[in-house]
Image 1: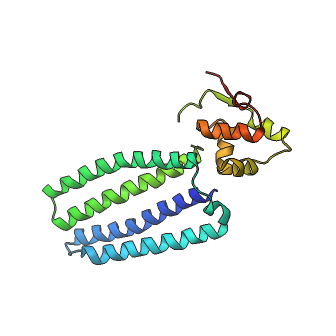
Image 2: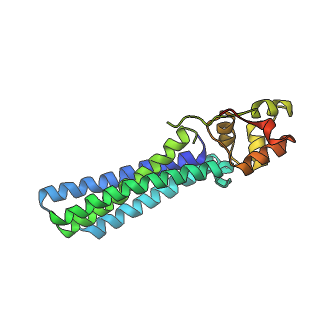
Image 3: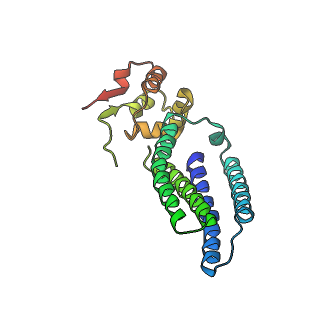
Length: 137
Length: 71
């Protein structure tokens, strides 16, 4: 598997797992009626996500140093561009749904809905990149 | 899944005729990844005009010897 496809898998799974845990904790707190401190948990979530991604990307680069050093070529740029473009539409829909929460929930829930929109669109982007590599373009 | 472009290529044969040049060798000479050369060879990806000229230049032939339009 080429380094950049591996990189997309790393980003996809770390985003899915870390945000999955974060939003599960948030949902549990919300259902139990407990306040959920946004910045503490979210800062920790971002720190874990960044650390995991750095460690796993370094490990992947050590396994294929030449591949990791090579600049993106035109096909890889096209794959990335298509995935970003597709993820933009996912973000638009998710952001609209997040905006609707203002009528039903408090500020913290709305902020988390916006974060969820960002997480979902990131997943769509990484997923699009993986799909592009699987299909060869 | 989009239909493959109606462009045939003879890269595999040209590599064979040029001392069994590997996909990795060709990729290094045109500044692309081996996976991209494989995708071009299999007709799954149509390269840019610049990349097509680079490939033809490596083999020392004209563009129409490497790529043929079948549309």
